[in-house]
Amino acid sequence: MNSNISLTSPIVSVAWLHEHINANNLVILDGTINKVFDNTTQQIPNARLFEIKKKFSDLRNPFPSAFPPTAQFQKEARALGINQDSAIVVYDDKGIYSSARVWWLFKAFGYNNVAVLNGGFPEWQKARYLTESMHEYQGESGNFIANLQPNYMRFFNDIEKASKNNTHKIIDARSSGRFNCIEPEPRAGLRMGTIPNSINLPFTDLLDNGVLKSKKDLAKAFYMVAEQDEPIIFSCGSGITACVLALGAELSGYKNISVYDGSWTEYGSLVTSDMEKPSTWTKEELLAYILMYVSHADLGESRKEKDYILSRVDKAIYNRVNQQFEKDNDYQSIQNIIEAVKSHNYYRNDLADLFADIKLMAFVDGDYDPMEQMIYSHLKKMLKEN
Image (cartoon, rainbow, N blue to C red):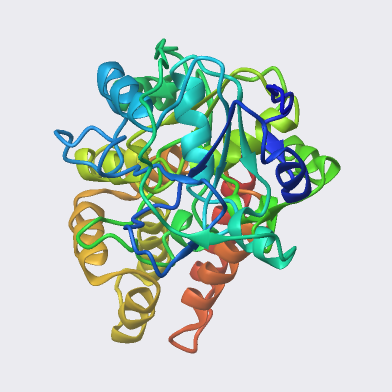
């Protein structure tokens, strides 16, 4: 007779799941985001589709995948047959992606007997374990009780305070290209940018082909960005992959962790950069301002210099920054740069790229004159000090 099981780790292997697949209280959830029912699609046997966007998000919220009300989460979890004694294993079709969001939602509603399947469905298939055609759950309703834990999810007011007052380490799970405003946001109409005082740890840095790296490698990744006793808020594009960082952090022994629900989609939509407040500038706006400062070393900006700046930043950003730059005198420009730099964490490689941009800007018209040399040296010293 199959007995009940308890989950002692937030991650389980496909071999473990295969061994315990007939446990009485096991519930397997397919947390693949945007998945629809299709009986030609394969799934892990007895998996139940956890529809993040349609049933486990606050549909009244204008931002995607928003944290659902307690009553809604409880109702939909019960509809999937989840009980108070269920052992829940979540997977997705990408490896580890949206499954971590499902894991974190259950924890945010006070339920800890839940784990993510390491490597997800791709690893299950790779091991050649049995699959079946996808089908809707038709069983009995469960008796799951949602018990909201307020500190697991953070919202806009929380992130504003944390950013302005440096009360938490804010760690962004987006790619380095998006975080550094080199690549555009995939969501149409969403501006590029970063939350002031945030740092970057791409969620993909924790994975090898959708499988979590070793605990040693995870611990090293987090050690590079935060101390174990620091309060941390994880962010991303819309609150999905921030939960991958939360999963890695929990495995690495971090306790005081939370997720910013709206993430950059909300923050970038609600906070427009105020050019009169350099602390709100994005890295791309700061780069544009610094390059303008260098280009005006000889009291004017040549066509070649303008073209170079436009090759590095979006035209709309150039126009916005240029309006502010023309208002500022030399002293104000220096103070603005200092204040803006303090709002971002520039690591050695970031600074090297920034210095390269400044030097290329100075050389772009073919004449690296003494004034440009002096400004380059001054900026280099100032940026390293801040």
